[in-house]
Image (cartoon, rainbow, N blue to C red; front, side, top):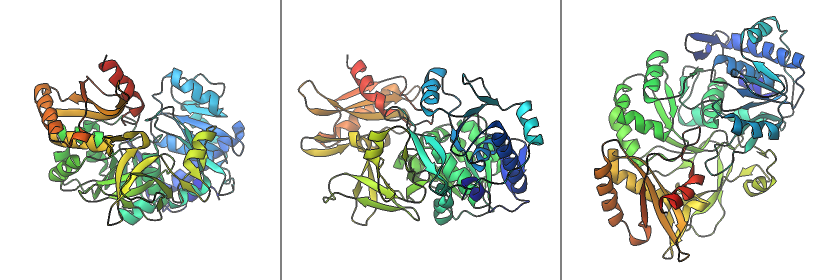
Length: 479
């Protein structure tokens, strides 16, 4: 099989496959352009298994270049175009791509620019037949977000895309009539798997945007392109609530809002439902799973497997948070040049564990409890930093802009909690009062020992909290 051919096999010729700004491309046009792009890549020397980095803002050209690499037998790698040279250089050196397709200058031996010459080359390229690959051959890599350290390259094989629409179709009722819009970018697995791949597999329309998402940008995209399914992240949902954008999205024809990337606070979910009439479906997935593996559709915050997902909690005690192991056709096969991480996270039979911890509740659903290093035993009882964060966020409401809890070690060698918080503009005094009252109301073993007020918390390029830096921030704030 070939993953690009599989993705393009469903859409009706005359149906719109992609929209970006004023551009539209039908499925017939997309198939033709991908064949031409593959012809261009083959003419340049791309062979089966060669890696090609795609480093540019989202666009129809991005999709054509990316799928063209896979059609030609290569391995496509979407990379954040906002990475500074100091961060991009070691990734290029480690991964050794055959070519880099980009818009801005990149220091690499073999660069293909998305410019007039590339477009002329496509127009004159000979469309080529698809290069067949074994279903276990690599088709694409995705970089992990780096929330807990240095990003890793997760390897996904050709068969990965076959069931990329299982969540969309099985939970959201995705059909060819839908229009999908993700505020996240295509170098992020959330948008790539659940919007682009799922949309193409169902013959639907996928809406792309070159610009970085803001509340106002999301509102403009919804007004212009009329999506029926919207995929976004908790941080942006909260910003849209605070700026009034959420209220203006009501009645726009959206059937489902989906939230993923990190845990959706219950207060944000309820506020979004009040503003729009639709509560977001909360999803859990990782770069390594490509698509969402767990989802929740009520205010409990508990999660259930998406269609085709198998899971295991291998501990004997349901009262103790345990690592979850997942199996699904979209799960990748491992990491590039990371044998220790691969041995820890991947097991034979297609199982993967992201290192996140869950508690199994009496009805079989799961409660997310954070990562291994987010769980502490204080006074003999388990405490999740996530539980503390959600409790404080709920108590502080709009007075709090960001909050994070981190486990630290005291001078006496004991485990304790530290909170790093950012007050909303003009709300510092009220936020301080509310957070102090919320901590006082907590069980003693869950009470943070420190609260540090900062101007901002560190985020990854995909907008997720960069937890690997919290310990150092606490140490600096604590003197």
